[in-house]
Length: 358
Image 1 (cartoon, rainbow, N blue to C red):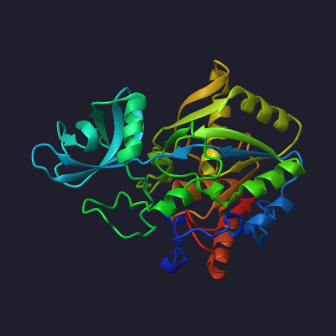
Image 2 (image 1 turned 180 degrees about the vertical axis):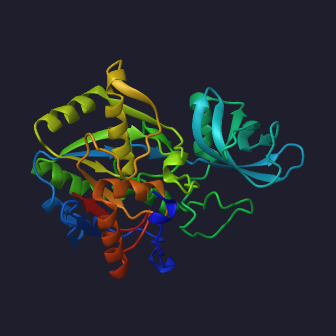
Image 3 (image 1 turned 30 degrees about the vertical axis):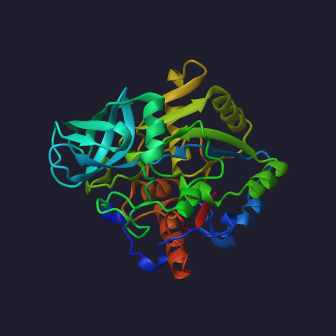
């Protein structure tokens, strides 16, 4: 299957720049994966399409301010360091913006933080070693870091070192670009699991009262979720690994629901990939939970083991996420749904509207 098979044209005016408020007033396409039938609703109507006993699996990761602005020790020139994921100790996988990237480059940040580029990973990322680690490092990052928005969300650039890697995150965005159920103990994502944006505390309460079961997993969103596919043959694309944690009770509850014939519904592609990856590796689950790196790549032809339905946003052309939803719903059905969304002027991407594939 070719990369060009997953292309489509999107008018820039349909790329959502701000979220709908209240969150659950966004629009919702209902896509029946068996019949291909499309219906148009609002997200708050989803309560009419979820049933008692359904299991919603949500990603409770919390976005952290992963964008650091520093200066090169040797020249004083500005440089952007975008934290992707911790490798071990004080070593992080990062994106480096600007010129002069090289092994040995020393970088100074605010409040005593320093880093050194130690390795070119040959995949667009660098290994950067910092002079701090653990809780002390994360507390300082919370103070001096900037939380990034995707580059298709345009904001005024207040920093001369801002680059294509990110956009500055005003105060309102800092609140909006986070799910209402993000867990303070699960900080680690550089981008939000945006399908969850549509949920409000009131809607969650109504769904629970109806008997819908909520289960939370953690996938810290990193480069794997949004790295572009460059290979024309999509099967040659290599996903970057991302950190996943699923507690044993959650695993047991999902297994029980599946055995009882109840629907497993992923909220977002990160939740779906987590569930499918964990149950691909269930023989390795130890110590009462699953915790580890996953790099599962789902594209048409994949046989789903656990997930039957998905709540998701509209995804970028040529992206692994568009390939994933095509695997679940069928490429022809996704083409039809996206065509309907374009015709009806739905809002696309992170702050955009939603789809329920069932």
